[in-house]
Length: 481
Image (cartoon, rainbow, N blue to C red; front, side):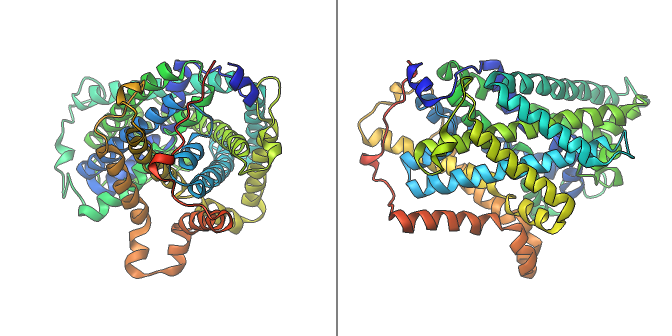
C-alpha cells in the first residue's frame, strides 16, 4: 500500500462497488427512453442486431481493459496505457479528450436534473435543482472514494431493480397473465418488421446503442482505487457484461413485442419524454396509474448517477495526467482521504461554466456538447489499440501469458473487432450529412475527431514522440504493497 499512499489515492473500492459502477454507468436514459426510438428506426430485429453487436464489442473492450488493469491497476488508466504501450502523444490526446468528455457530460447531466424535476415542480426554475444537485455531487466526491462508491452502488441498485420488475411485468403482459389478452409476438412481423430501413438504419442504431453502453469503461478508471484489483476487476467484468446484455436485449425484446415499431410512443429520446417512455407505457398497461412518476424518479437517479460518475472519472483522469506530467502539477495533490481536491475543483468549475452557458449562451453550450459527442468512442478505440500493443509487447519481450492474472479471450480478434466497429460507429454518427455533404452539420457531428487530432498532433510535434518499439514498451508492474 505504500506505493499508492505516496501517489495519494486510497484503495477502498470493493468488488460490489466496481460491478455497480460499471453497470450503473451504462443503464440510463439510453435504456429507459431512447431504446424505443431505436426500435422505431430499425424495427425490432434491427434494434436487437445493433444492441447485440455493440454488446459484443463492449465485452471485448472490457476484457481488453481488464487484462491491462489487473496487470497495471492505475487511476486514469487509458491515458497511462496509451502512453506506455503505444505513443505518449496518444496518451496525452486520450487523457485530455476523456477528461473534457466527462466534464461536459457532467454539465449536461446536471442540466438534465432540472428538466426531470420540472415534471413534478413545473413552476420552479430548473437551474435551482441543477445547482443543488451539482453541490450534492461535489460533496459526495469530496468526502472519499468510498462515499462515491456507496452512492453509485445504491443508485445502480434502484435502476437494476426497475429493469427486473419491468422485464417480469413485460413478459407477463406478452403472455396475457397481466394487462388483458395475450399480445404474443405478432408485432415482430407487423408491416416491414422485423428489419426496417435496412443496413443504414441498423448502423444509425449502432450509434444510439454505443451511446447507451458508454460508461462501462469506468471500470478501468476505478482500478487504481480497487482494494483487490486482480480479483475484483475480472469478477466485475464477467458480471457486468451478462447483466448489461440481458437487460438491454431482453428490455428491447419486451418493448418490441408490446409496442409495434410504427407506434408514435416510441419516438421519445430524452428526459422530457418520460410520459412516452416504453417503461412508462408498459407499467401503465398493467394499471400502474403513477407509472410516469415512478419512471421519472428512476430517470432522476440515472441522471444523478451519470453526473456522479462523470465527476469521478474526469477528476481521476486529470489527477493521473498530472502524475504523468501532461497536466499541471497542482492537479496531482490529494487530501488525507485520498481525494484529488484541486482536480475536483477544476472539473466542477468547468462543469459549472458549461451549465451556465446552457442558460446564458445556448449556442456555446450546444458547441461544447457537440465537441464531446464522439469522445467516448475515441476512448474505446484507444483501449483496443493499447491492448493490442500491450499483448504483442508482452510476448515480444519473452513473457508467458500464464503470468497474467486475467487474460482477454480470442486475442487478437477482440481488439481488432472493437477497432473496426469503433470506426464504423464514428463514421455512422451522421450518415445523412455525409451523404448530402452538409458541411455545417458534419462540423457539429464530427467535431470531436479534429479536436482529438489537434491534441495528438500538438504533443507529437512539440515533443517529437514516436510509436514505441515493442521491445522498448514499459511493462514494469505497479506493486500494491
